[in-house]
Each structure stands twice: as C-alpha cells, then as structure tokens.
Length: 257
Ligand SMILES: NC(=O)c1ccc[n+]([C@@H]2O[C@H](COP(=O)([O-])OP(=O)(O)OC[C@H]3O[C@@H](n4cnc5c(N)ncnc54)[C@H](OP(=O)(O)O)[C@@H]3O)[C@@H](O)[C@H]2O)c1
Image (cartoon, rainbow, N blue to C red):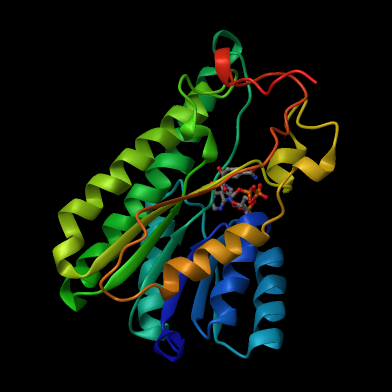
C-alpha cells in the first residue's frame, strides 16, 4: 500500500456517518485528506481524531455541496495546500421518505442539489487535472436501493436520483478510462447512521442494520486493486431486509416468517 502514501483525497460529508468512516479508511492507508461538510465544529474534531490516530495531514473545509462557490473553494484550497487531488469520494447526501404525492416540492430541489449536482459538479471541478495527470480515482457513494426495480416505495425521488448517478458514473468511466481514471459506484445497504435514524419503520431488529465496516473494506479494495483494474460497481447490502414494513414492492418483498 506504499503507493497510496501521501496521495490526496477529498471526502465529502465526512463530519459523521459513512463519510467519516471512509475518511478514516483513507487515512489508515496513509492518504492525506481534505474533509468537507457544513458543520465546522464537527469537521475540526474529526480532523483532529484522524490526525492523532494516523499522523496524516487533514484539512477541514466548511462547504455546502449545494453551492457551486463552496465546491470551487474546496478544490482550490485543497490544490493550494497539497498541490494535487488524486482521489475524490463523493458521499455528502441527504435522505427523504415521502409518498410522492405528499412530498414537498422544495424537497426535490434539496435532493437534486445535494445528492446529484453536489456529486456531478465536484467531479467536473477535479476531472480535468486527473485527465492531465493521467490518473485519479472517483468513488461515488450511491445506494443499494438502486438495485430494486421498481424503486422502493416512499423513496422514489431519492432513489431515482441515485439511479441517475449510477448511470452517470458508469458512462463517465467509459469516457475517461483511457486517461487512467477509475470511477467506482459504491452501493451501501441500510446502514446505522444519523440519516437512517430519522427514517420511519426502519427496523425492529437493529442487528439487521449494517455498520460502516463493510463499506470501509470495500473502499480499501477499490483503492488497492491493480493499476490496470477498475472496480466499476460494488454493492454491499443487508443480508436480511431491515424494513419493518415492505418498502420494496411486489415479489422482492422479504418472505413472511
Ligand atoms: N445510511 C444509509 O443507510 C445509506 C444507504 C445507502 C446510501 N447512503 C448514502 O451515503 C451517504 C452518507 O449517508 P450517511 O448515512 O452517512 O448520512 P449522515 O450520517 O446523515 O451523514 C451525512 C453527511 O453529509 C453531510 N452533508 C449533508 N448535506 C450536506 C451539504 N449540503 N453540504 C455538505 N455536506 C452535507 C453531513 O454533514 P453536515 O451536516 O455537517 O453538512 C454529514 O457529514 C449519502 O449519500 C447517502 O445517500 C446511506
């Protein structure tokens, strides 16, 4: 793993949950980091935890991924400090659980600007340097819900945007593979984080929820495959469905006890 030492990664949404776990994963491989999210205090405390444990350089940047200016500032500040960006981990996201006809119209914009444009804009801001360097890895944290067809009930705007991202990521790989750039979609199942704690009817049995461990291991796999290999899509989903009520329609519902 020596070849990862002193590489530079940006991890979005690293103040807690999956993003924080992935930032620790990178640091354990010797990668220096820019971590971004909106909450400055949490970010600073995560940066200190990572530095103390792994002795890598960590730059916390307050950034709202829905704002183009904040994304531009994150990229420029990272380049000024580290001189390069080798890895981008797009993770900052929000959830939303509504029957479509009751979903507030403003919620669509929040989801599009955070979960879709937040990812695509940041990729656009880093990819030209990666093309110039003829190397780079972009990991997009998508969602296991994109494996369902039809998409889960009450999550159709969230999941259809994630499905769009998955399609975008795969297509982008075909466009940039000859520049040595890897693009990977990581599809987590229902994971025990603050995001899921706000959802209704998640689980009656918390052992069905995933921890971030398998996602951290999947990221390490992505970052350590041979140079001439790209792990295009990795799904790590719950062994047993965690939902107390069926959200996955028709024949995909978990069998009754
Ligand atoms: N948990 C799951 O079951 C699950 C399953 C599949 C996929 N995912 C995906 O995994 C990603 C992380 O989810 P999580 O469960 O770790 O959620 P979480 O615990 O709620 O953490 C979300 C992170 O994103 C940041 N964030 C949210 N909005 C932001 C914004 N506008 N600008 C900058 N940062 C923002 C938050 O930081 P601040 O509040 O400080 O900004 C926080 O660090 C999301 O993309 C989610 O869709 C999660």
